[in-house]
Image 1 (cartoon, helix red, strand yellow):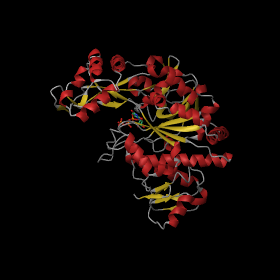
Image 2 (cartoon, helix red, strand yellow):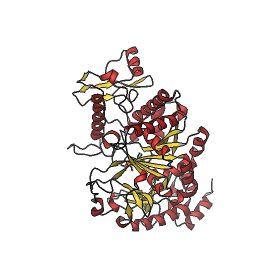
Image 3 (cartoon, helix red, strand yellow):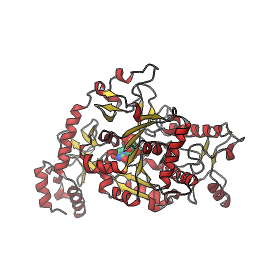
Image 4 (cartoon, helix red, strand yellow):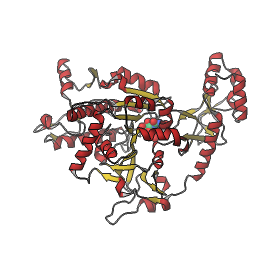
Length: 503
Ligand code: UTP
């Protein structure tokens, strides 16, 4: 570790010497903590980031309309409009890749979930399903199921490694939760957790804030931090050793996410893509969602705020929105592409700057909780790598079966969007549809299908055909059912790898 004297010099050189202002007041333990934190920061690099960030802040608000083009038609397909034969081909190919062990999942779970407002990682959130399952459990069970499907098709169930990116604020709790729940039936060695980086929070003059006298104010570097973190934590190497070729990367907060979706993977592999985006049709011109498009011939996501109302409203001859490919943080990457990004392009990723109210200790040693924005947080976004490839494809899926985000807390009026109530509603609506398609009837809104029984509505007839579901029910897999019977458990418990989690 660097000495105090060396650190002082670095800080003076980089105009950040205020960070040691309270050093002499600290006890030994506090001193050590602060020194350790400071010696982990590359001050000339973060100062440069601040400069770049302020420049990009000045560019914010510039509209991109005149440069935007929809993605070329040969890079776009829609699950709803292609024929069933082609769809089956993609699925078959995806399942084959899974059975060969070529596919892994990259879960982005480093966000702080400030809008949802719970003090634990979002993946641990339960939206109140009849089973009580959390987002992590649902996703883990979908991975388990898709491995079974690949075995059914090919005779070999390839491993799907679950790479989970956490951050300082979510890491330890996530680790403990997964461990306490036996990784929800997945093999412990195939659940690989790693931490994304943190960046200092700055005031508008480029001075880094102290959160308290012995702690620098740091925040996760955005979901685009994934590229740096994959390299720095040896994850790219781990993928190489395991023979992983393709990654399905997605956010933690979409309750409908088809984890390791064989159809999406098969489509991207078939097209020889390095990178793919799953999208949903924008619900209307005013939906505040980024759109996948091209700017000056490069693939990009353009945020709702970056286009004028006129462009958002543009329609083709059939009345469809021209810019309608809503980005849902659901991507395909080849490992070759991820290596290329980490080696050559990571430092060129755009910086997204948000003005925030940053609590801190001022130079008089007072704790300040600002009521207006007093500084900036810098983030990178996962989709900003699209521009570094032309082997890019877009796969449009129906929203009702693939996308319902959990962003906000419920409100007392019941009018919140993207909240626990809407997540639960959308999942149970989909399950109702699956049951009806398989010949069952559902007369309540409380019937759930275990992901261990069915991944996307298949395998249900034998369990539901001709039956009426009129009360709160979780339709379990045979394995879960057997476990329930053996353990004489009657009332809606949640099962995971031989354990019950009571609602
Ligand atoms: P959001 O941008 O919606 O952020 O993340 P969030 O943390 O979930 O919620 P707010 O904005 O604080 O309310 C989209 C996805 O990206 C991940 C999140 O965990 C989520 O899966 N993410 C976000 C990261 O992994 N790291 C980050 O630094 C930020």
